[in-house]
Image (tube, rainbow, N blue to C red):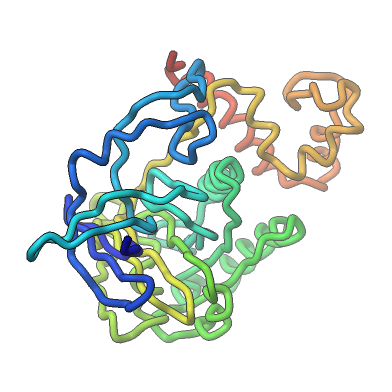
Length: 318
């Protein structure tokens, strides 16, 4: 049976690369295979509501960019007949088998947001996907503004996150990024307008991807990427995906959030209520004490409290 790797998807049409011959093929998914019977251990079986149980079920599964699939050729038509197990899956951007996420934030237009940074980090931690952080458009702000961002990011570097500063148009800081893509599937993620396509063009000039600056009237970027596609780069793949400006938590209960903050977890052992502490109103909370002492940025704690409220306001799905 032939095996391919999906590198591009436009609607219900998939571009495959044969893993043995590296032949490029255009395929469609055969309808009858997409209704798959899953057991509890299947990588396709996941919780989608607060009360969902991972029990045997039959569901519809569609191929995605990053999937390894079996395919067959019938005349002049290529059919995907089976999807191999996935090790990871994102919904927005809609990609699977990802090894890491390159989070792109701009200094300006749109302005750098620690709120969005913390939100992305929570969601990626939940997905067990390591992030690499890129701050773009460093040429469009003055030294004082850039210094403020760098000082704020210094705390995240102490948590082990890699942070890079780039000017994509002049290729400043681009070369030092090359090593992070090797032997990995990397997704570029971030608000529309932060410069994801510009960054890709700087890494791979031959792509000549369409870029568009942020709309001053709307205060947000216009979508320039219309489909999901994988690009071969430095023995790895980079995924360019349609931009998005709204991300939501897949959390059902507020007390789940504290488990997605590695710095809070480390301090929880010294809270009066230990790992039961939610770090809000409890006395003897080591996290709140660390915030008061300046050991944790107040913005990070305020974002945590805001996320708690956001999760409470979400309609609980049953």
